[in-house]
Image 1 (cartoon, rainbow, N blue to C red):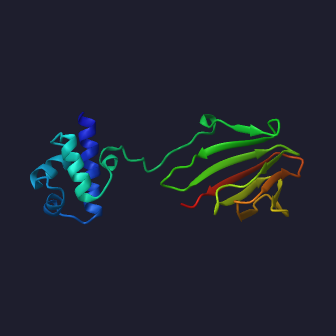
Image 2: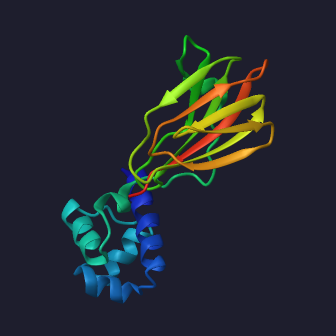
Length: 184
């Protein structure tokens, strides 16, 4: 319970400061006393769910924004912890490094394509875009029938809501990064 009190206190203070609200103004908006808000921020009080809801509604934030553990400033993703998804008899491998998140609107992958490996995509959600950078090898990216040959260090951005494909035209493993952006 103490941990939740600390998290709630830190989150409340951060939200109040971001909105540039004094303790008094936060109290006026939420109907929770200035003293109680101060105690919550210092981790000295364990408020009821009703009190947390009053604060959330008064500050026009979600209930969970007050009680969730904030994301760390940095997150390491170890390759050994990422489960690959494969296609084309294992010759095309996708490593979802940073999966899609509603608040970010994108996902990030590492891709490996064996020589002659290929993947065809029908296209993604309307307005989607892909951003690809090749780090090793050669990849032919076909978008709606147009072909683009990428080599080590080359990048491409394209509208991904139409048919597209990737083909390793070289004789070594192709390695690339892929970011897919999904509009709201």
